[in-house]
Amino acid sequence: MDARQRGTVMALGFCGLVSAADNWFVSPALPSIANTLGVLPSVATIILTAYLIPYGCLQPVCGALGDKVGRLRMLRIIVCGLTFSTVLCSMASSLEMLIVARVITGCFAAGIIAVSQVLAGDAVSAEDRPRAIALLMGITYAGQGLSAGLGGAITGLVGWRVAFMSFAVLGVIALLGLSRLHESADDRAARAAGAQGAGLVDMVRLSGHLVLGVGRKVYGTALATGVVFLGVYGFFGTFLAERCGLDAMQAGLLMMGYGFACLVGSTLTGRLAGRIGVARTLALGEIAGLCSIALLLAAQATASWVPALVAAVLLGAGYIMVQPTLATRALGLDAQHAGLCTGFTGFGMFVGGGIGSTLGRMLLGAGGYGLLWIAAAIALVVQLIVSLRLYAGE
Picture 1 (cartoon, rainbow, N blue to C red):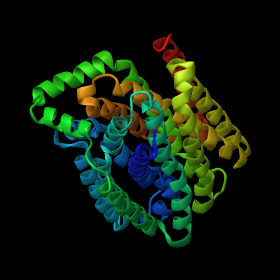
Picture 2: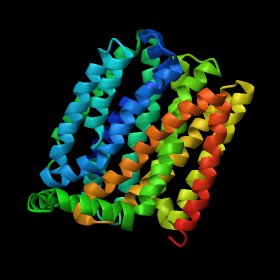
Picture 3: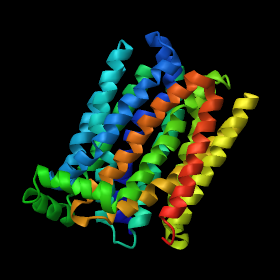
Picture 4: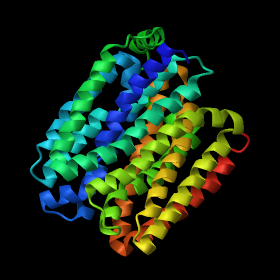
């Protein structure tokens, strides 16, 4: 990639950073939010699901709309909506109001990753695409981890409402960055083709062909990854508060290890997949996730934050090996409908995260964090075995 292409990918990555930050800073802030709204922290985790479910479900829709109306135009619209709805979150006076605001935020944010991935792929050559996607996702999920530290610090110092407002300001900065980008020839061609292209019935048929046919193993792996990786990450904040005794600022700073691992790992993942293949890259990511869960069990047994710090780093490293690898595979499924293809990757990942959060609350209520981490480890072992078989030879 040259300097101009890298700048484009970084501007797109910052939009992804804002969407990830807007969601995941909530994890270390959950105890404070729960205290303000008068509910238990385990009950307040529903606001994670409230964001993740629409965020995942609408990604294919936003990706398909981007193919039709223009991807850069679509990205500007949804970043604007994300910024406004984040302000609404800061004004919520009850858990019910916050849930509604988070649903609205998730709806607007849904297409950011899917649309940005296609724009990043359009900005570079086919040879540079894996590195561009890995850089994009590294910046995005660095936001997930770094926002935990920043959001936790702001929450600890001046409260979670100010934290929401701070991330709305980041949304404004992202919009300014998008204003400097210009529609590419690929984007114009896709918009022209989309305007004359398939109707709703045909798009439903194409979606079925992608999800149940050529892309089923990619999207199935994405769903499983979301259930475990995003599900586990969503409970980090409450675990650190309830088991390790950390406040919101301390928990957020610890969870920054996840973000640093994503950022550093993003520079390696694209090259790694090219050298050792898809199957081994996915396996390395899943093994890193297993090691992370083992360390969380150690933290559970000792009530120490030290194993949890290493666990956060390994979880980020594992996730950044898996997610961009799947996204790059999805981009190659159908070039004309690339937004729809990447949208279903996000659909699987973030709906999986919402399912993971829901199942996690049930397991937490039934047997505490020990049961939750053991169940996550079993699920990840199954995913590792299945993905080695599905991607054998790739």
